[in-house]
Image (tube, rainbow, N blue to C red; front, side):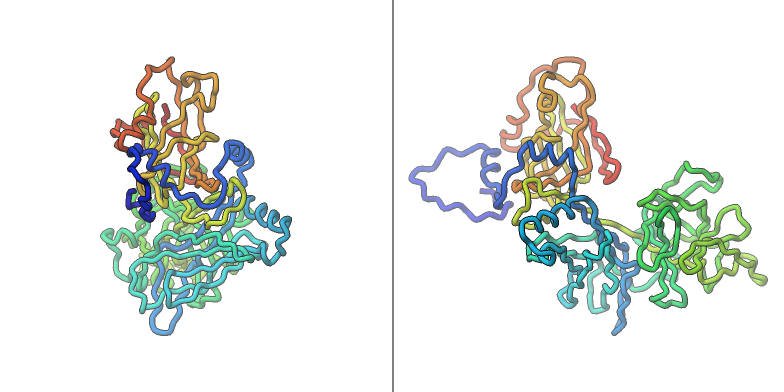
Length: 498
């Protein structure tokens, strides 16, 4: 029995050794089957119709500044947990119907930095909103880690464990760099197309922190919620319009940028990002923009107007030319923003055969699909993270023969088109199906990706069935890839198919 699955050796009590099973049969017999029913095709059909997922999003900054001595430098902006999807409400309603009281059906959650010296902090997920923030997390100077991840532990009031969900990796920094930043420290620089948060803190007072945010179709300065904005580099001669061409590269001071809300898609007018020093906007600075830098946003083609806040409102503020230094402009506190890169971890699942006893974590995440071969021997390779031997790949409502390779790789046989179009012997018109991973106790993990069967000119020549390849020692010849499709969470990219 292969050691990699971490299962105990089987007791050998048989009188005579059985004939050795082939690899795929051995693989199938080793799957750990927790209590719960395997997903039925009818249950998958119902899920694909209704899509009542449970979705958890952890939104956080990519860097965290250390606290020194007895100070507690709380993470800013504070990590936020968002719950989306109908599944949460439906599950709680089901628990109440089955006799649980309201307290037992409530969601409970704690968040921490994976450090035994610090207690996990409770999150309020029953506040009637779809999110909550962890406002008092910090990392001390006694913690020697250079990177860490946030851990969110979730369970119901009756003690039923949902699981532990992790953020993306967060880099620890001692303080914002005062030096002219170099692209050698690329992980501290801010690249075009990445997401940032902007906050303003009057007179360095934590209680006065305001975050740029979009609500009800308006930009505003929020004391409670922060927005993640995609920062795009523009050509200097790019005109103002709803559509614009973007450039790759790192954002430097003096660059023309566009800030677009990652949730609503709303954008601010074209801005020139400028370095700030002692309430002065520096007009000639051109070094790369770095984490937790103070910066100002000049509204392009205006008379020294800057993006500014006035309490909750976002306004334009007119700077004053500096009489002694023509390469500087005087701005007020409200026009001085701190910039920081942000990241998010997103997990999606659905209990397809009803509540399960085991935690739903680790939630598998698929980054890309890679097609090998075609016709009768089309194999799909999935790359990602958190894969386990208990997962099967499904194409729409059809379960595919699946082989687990490692935590980052799985392989499956692409089902025949007749599985979806019973009368078709070959693909007559493009047919797109969603790709899902399903655990053997019925939990469905949507990947956000689809597979497209592309039309064929006629009946295909018969090849050895793909399952024979799967059974021939598990070695699959690498064929030229017909598609290598990047993962996109919100805009699934169709795959080139068979």
